[in-house]
Image (cartoon, rainbow, N blue to C red; front, side, top):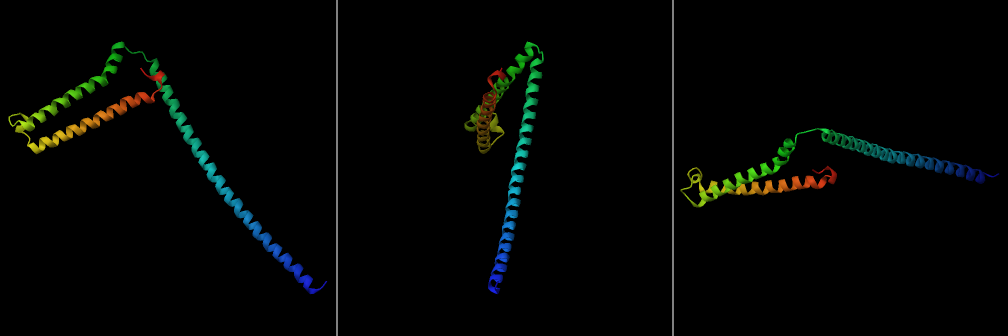
Length: 159
């Protein structure tokens, strides 16, 4: 064996060893990276399972609460009063708001009106704007809440 063959063999062994170390390092790097991805997915899955368990617990509590409420015996007049509360309150608020609105509107053009003695024209306009904005807000809130509440309940839960 000559020196050139020996040097070639040593060079091949060295370069093969270096390439093997680089490959092993790359393999270790990729395993570590894959483990991080797996850990991230596992953590996300555990988080999702915790959310599902929390939602199921909340739902089960709601179902049990509804079952318990269904077993309560109440007098018919109690249910009648309870069912008339929303419409009665709404009607009363509309009557009061309507009354205030017309009194302020009357005071705007009539200096002899009772409210004209206490408010300037600018204050009356400001109050009228506030009443109108409040009525629009209240109306949209009531419609969205009351009818939205009914739309989200299954038909068997509706009274």
